[in-house]
Image: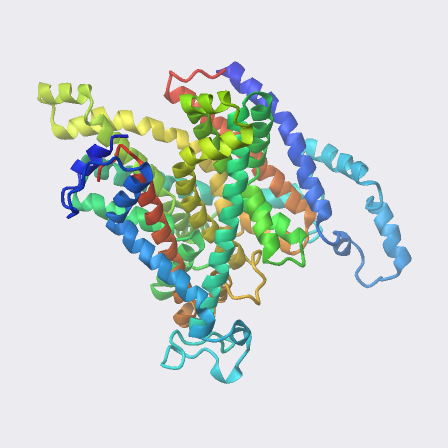
Length: 321
Length: 306
């Protein structure tokens, strides 16, 4: 397993290299360059602009610029943001915790809801409750996340006024106080529910079908024949076997969550990575854009690896080699 | 596939007694699909939405009219003049919803067609030839799969600054064919082991002929189901991108562009008629496509006997 992991990680290096070439090329293809944000806006003397271009290396051949960018990236330096006038890593470091909090809350909500709904549906298959749950799942699959977010803001933030509609923290709240954490939680709960509840369908269905299948197996019949209580059969014997395969979906979720955060964060103007990305594309802040694109792509790679590793852990019949 | 089994499971169907004649798999699937209520209602609904969108101009007004700003009719509530009211620029929401449907659905269908074509070609080639062809194509597919979809569509879209809907179709298609390719490859690999393929090859069928004439018709059911899934996903992709401002140019009405108006708190809070209609129709359209997909999957599955 360790050997396999190491081999996979080494195998990622050329892929990451290729991805970096793609990301850099795309950034260079984008119209305009980041110069305008860097120089004195009052000085429009062509000579001055030319000098600044030269100084920043924007006149160098593209491969030279690529090598310069890449050598920074390897050392964890993605350059400076032209709009925010700060190192990109610092900027991302500021925003990343928000996205991680949002992502983890959303994942927890997904797992909790899917576990409860799947367990109920699996045990009481073809009951009214089961049909209601599957109706919810169909709806959750069909509603695009941004429509769900709009409806959620309309109902919970505007009409009921339970939670704020945007931002990640109330104004004038001091960091570190209890008030701060409460405000943060209040701002996170709605986007997290939207992000999390919409993703439950696949898990619920998976758990339900697996439980129904397991309930016909011999070991369940044996347990029944012994006179084990029905609740114990479901909670102990079946659920334990059915819950394991679900874990494998986690790997794919890591990348999906960050991708999905782009839309959700933008709607809630929640200052995370996804919103930062949309901002940076709109303001042509290339260094930030490239950094986020690289990060999320590498995250996808790692997510796939985690998924494969979890498969091996869960099902010993799969040999990782 | 034993046709007699399926006939036994449908005693309710009042058909004249015919001499037992084996039905083709397609006829069986069609009958099973026609009996699926959810799928049939969805199909009727989807057709209705499509027809209304196509007839947007005769039903309401030409598309140029829907773009005209009318200051005397700003933010009017639904009435007999404007069935769904008017938006902040005085444009008729009902007309824009129909025209928007035309653009959104046309885009989604075009992208789906492109995605399914590319995916099927790549998947069938890789699966049929195997060896280094398979290896090269699949490594490339894996590589393309690494790019987070939404992120790279946004990046590509901002490269083509003067972009039309054509570039959007291209950009989304280029990034979305990988799943279909993998699926078709695995199906083709399983299917080509059958003897009829070997006999086709042995009587001298060329590779393209074997693939298109013998292999693909037999994996067609999988491809059709995949196409419905793709269609739903592409409607979401287009509207989501337009909503964020990276999709169809804002002056063309689409469901996503109409929903973009809801990003202003004023519209979201107090002018529900501007954003609820496109949101509702969008959701129900996707829901109906999902049901149709489910129905098709069921109909093509010889083991299911609903």
